[in-house]
Length: 478
Image (cartoon, rainbow, N blue to C red; front, side, top):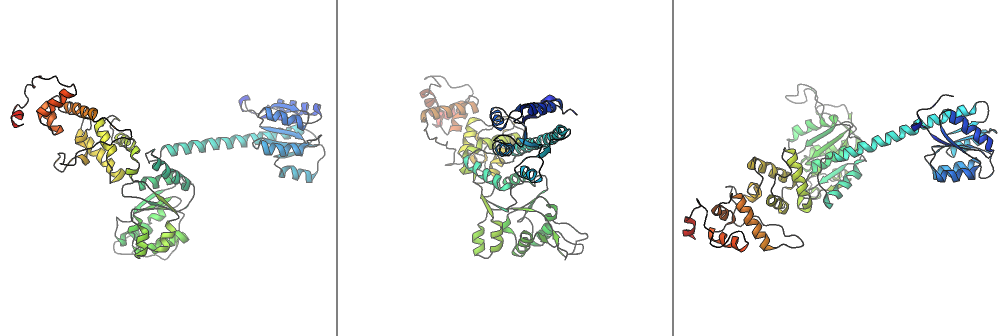
């Protein structure tokens, strides 16, 4: 017989026959063919062995004392569905063969001639198929893991995880998705995540902003045009729906789409067909549609500014994205993400600046946070980013606006006001490089008041002289 692959790849086979000499003989010949084999004298002994160890395959005689081959086959398929079963018999009958195959046996072999060679061939084919299935499963799991790790959405807050879970659930379908949320809440990133987790991930990803183009240009952009369809149409141009064939098209700001184009979009959703501008030939596409809006489409429907039938077709799976103020735990992760994006270290923000970021509500959501980080990096240059570099803590003139200075977030367990005051004084002195007059100005205090509070916190001994070079005129003005 032809040998099978190396020992580590050999199938483990249990041969079952109530005539123990026959079981031993078949097991020996299969072992010679390269399989790892054991044998059992009857169905009851076989079940005990299967309960004690894992086998890739069972080769069983049909006619045995109870439990016979049929009973053993049924039990194996129920309890060990990944174990393949080959039935062998000296009493061939077409109806019995049909029955065993229907019950889940991979083959039915007659005991005549070199029948063990037939069994070996069947087992090899089963082993190759099983190995291929396992490799495909591992590859699929690896790809899924890599795709999930590569998702563009950053965050671990409960609201973020809930939205991501919903996105993952709908991604594996072909359903139309309507992403809803405030401007800057990450609708584009969620749309990309849904595409990347879908069966269309290898297909094209096409994005169109419906509010960025006038009606005449938007129709041509979406559906294409024929040569001569309008002035300047010097050649045929495929539309974005054609570009997205076998992939996903993301229609951002869908609430801005003109009513006349809403009819054409409805046709694409319902019939998967459309015509180019100036054309009359129907074009069929296979496209998954994801839309997004920050507008109240229900109100627009009532005001007849948006078609009700289109709204219902787009709203198959609405997904509401949380604003950043509802996911404050994500702010540090987002800051770290954007620092990496701009080539800065994770420790670029000092503690006070990071606390300020965590307590600010970011009405512009993630988009505002990214712009804040980018601007702060430009202003800070090689120095650490401090509160003075944060746009929301500065007025147009660059100074902290009156009545709008930063206030730290009070944690659930509370805080010690004395410790906070001491820490702010230390930070101000560090920022002013030890210059007391400059530190006092940073804190909105007179130098004399700063000295008093430094003495209270043990940062200065009473009677210590002022620093050389400091503006003594400050004392006269106090």
